[in-house]
Length: 272
Image (cartoon, rainbow, N blue to C red; front, side, top):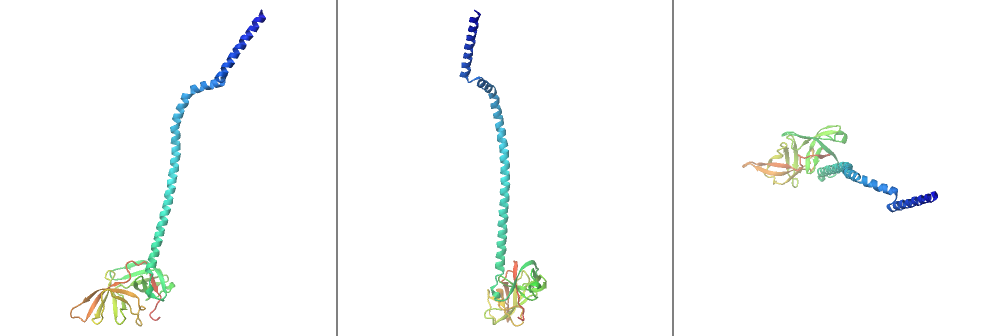
């Protein structure tokens, strides 16, 4: 009897175990079920964490990207500054080259040797008109040598140092230059009247015919201070006094004496 009961218990347990196994298999196993249950419990919290963390992540990413943008902008500004500096330097160089080329364009000098010099100081007054240049005795300059620039005669060397010189401009009140015009049959003395007053020629005989716009150039007479043919001035106005045997001229220098940056010193002496 006991044996029958034992067998019955074994059969019942076996059936129960079979049912349990079938159920677990159908639902994906114990661990799957546990994971599912855990996901069900944790899922709301996980959503909340994701929703909170997402803006923080965006903020951190934005902060990192903002730093990159700032660094890139700083680099771009630096490169732009360098480019602008190069452009300014190029413009300055081109401007300086243009000044040199323009002011040292002196074909009227011919084959006479010259020394190019830069004007370092402008010291004009209503009466005295001088400039300082950066060339002197060491470069072959002597007192009395002509100084020219684009347009014509500027002045003459007044004094020298080993590496510098002072030039007296033709507008200086103590400047007197022998000039001629046309075919060179008439000679006139041109005097400086001060920086703001240009040049003048006085006591010209009525027999000497000259008109507005006439070009006057150095006459190059024996013992003169300048070689022949250097442009000096053009006639602006003619002043005639009724009954007088002479007339006067006001003249405009052919060289721009107010904007001198570079000049040429002509290595010429009256005895050469």
